[in-house]
Image (cartoon, rainbow, N blue to C red; front, side, top):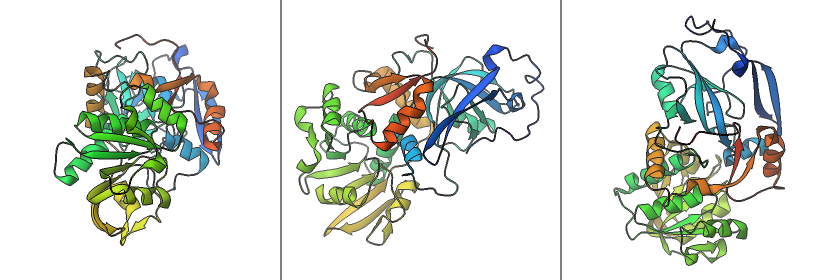
Length: 375
């Protein structure tokens, strides 16, 4: 939900009258409209400093495929869906209203799936409002022992954990031991699915058309060479599970998943879907968005189709814990392929949306020049 900067708000009697000083004197944020990304600048709106408000100073943010789809118009507009533009972020709390239960200087990350009002992370501040319990779902505290240097982002790892754990639940199992898993799409999410599948005992194979993306995955050193393959090499019926982690799951990608999964196997829908994706009478867009599961017959095979969507604060805590405990198994800091400044965001994300600039890995926006390790 987008926060309206112009709405009248009751002043916070504990904080609002305190002099703001230079650090909250000015506010800039980016927004996208009809393919154009531009910044807005104004004095910081002090009326937003209410008892239920938190202000976060982003240290760095990431450009997500969902952001790119917002710019390019590939994200289907559905009433009631959450505002996503600018949601991958790690930052410091610089203001905490009395009713929030947060403290200044805490390091937090954003769970965009929580239903709180907030501004974008593509700015020098992120402002969130809501009941205490909602804010604690939306802003997940990063413990001091979890380092944020070198930079890394727990999103989309938290979403991958949520989706794959949901698949296991739908299949009535807690392990992927010995399971052959095909992952269609070797972007950030696809590689993370591969890493988490291997952690759960599965035999993961990454498929992608793009040679640069396959080479990027190979350089991580986490997969055997024969487990990183061109998409057209995927064999019919060879996999117990197929995970579709492309930017968009269209008829072609869905057909590939249906072809390569074995009879009585499972498809996990993670990439974006549109409302016209129908199979055997089932609305697969609805299946994905609700994280539900259906059984159907496809290409003469009985298969299980499971949706992967969203995540919880608990998934973020799991992602933080796995990275802190096993950074070699989950080398998330090595996903960063380029770092830009906040002012470079419009031209960078517009180029990515047009296809003129499409590097593998994660593009990081460093908003604060230096971060203290371990904080």
